[in-house]
Length: 262
Image (tube, rainbow, N blue to C red):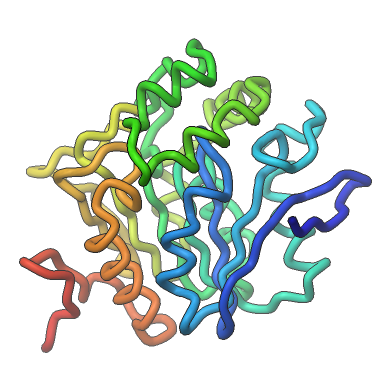
């Protein structure tokens, strides 16, 4: 287990592979562990880091650190402590909000963002996140299978206060504006059957800036990286191999994930 000390507390992380730095940020249910298959898929070309946010997994649990501002600060402090330069970020749920928040503040430090299950408004987030126990959330969102075992095992490690604090702060953020203000290439991904974050309707995708694009996984719930791993990993690879500054609108869904040839 690898840790770095920030704010006098421990941040747990794991790293795999060599190449350009790629950061994975987990969501409200689970920890770094459900990223393992994706980290393995990207490790031939990237040095993939996956972190446990404050209050989750094996990172420290201290309620003063659970604000969204402190979670963004965790990412800032981690990158500084590790001496990591320009990054790509993959964030899921809460991690997607943190990724977008960090990218708007540190444009020169972020090359691109994939935001999975990013809520386009507070009302899009299910109240069950706040009202259910950790075991109930795991049962609700994760079927019992070898693919979801890691996420289920880690879910009970979270401090429920960390989930509640993030939702309190997110309630005061203009999430739609945050998605519009991203100054770098961003790929928004939703599972069409996500019970946690309501996706945009398929017949009315969100209006996004030129450097952003939206793709729905029609057979996925809250965890498209677990529900449709082959499709997800192909899409992520296509996104990561775009030239720096290139819009992901070149990506589209066909029988296979392919880059459109102009």
